[in-house]
Image 1 (cartoon, rainbow, N blue to C red):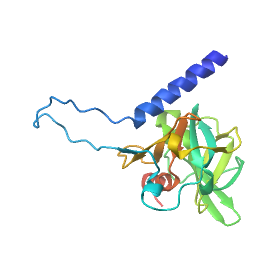
Image 2: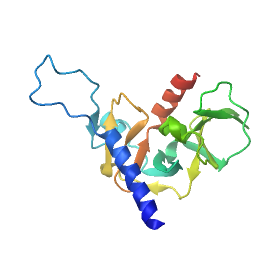
Image 3: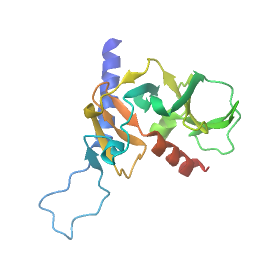
Image 4: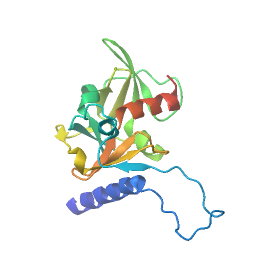
Length: 193
């Protein structure tokens, strides 16, 4: 069983690494043959540090959805609790599981598995992770205490055309790193405000 788990982790790591690797352009291609594509810029430091803003917190919550592990900055997490009953969603988009009323308002609950890949929608998600201003929450599985991730060990990406919420790839622990602000903006674009 442990061999299967290691194989699954390697497959997920390879998948995330492939997402983070820009496509090569042939050196011998003539200008007429070169196709213009969005280029993702890689940095050794998070964009916030490069822009002169305060550095990101090194503490992250490791969230799992459909076997994929991602790190969410603890500074962007407001609360975490067992999955409560939800009000059904207003639309049929598989990303939105519904709404949850909390003391200071209402949060839309997004299925982290469906965000990662639509064909993984509906994976086991026993935990609700409330984000930022409490208008959005993630349904996922949380199995570990928060961890520290050294930003120097993360391969950051900037200006991504696909999955703009995937801020980078951590080498240790091996997981994707979520940009919470970009994730919320993407959710509002996909599902409406």
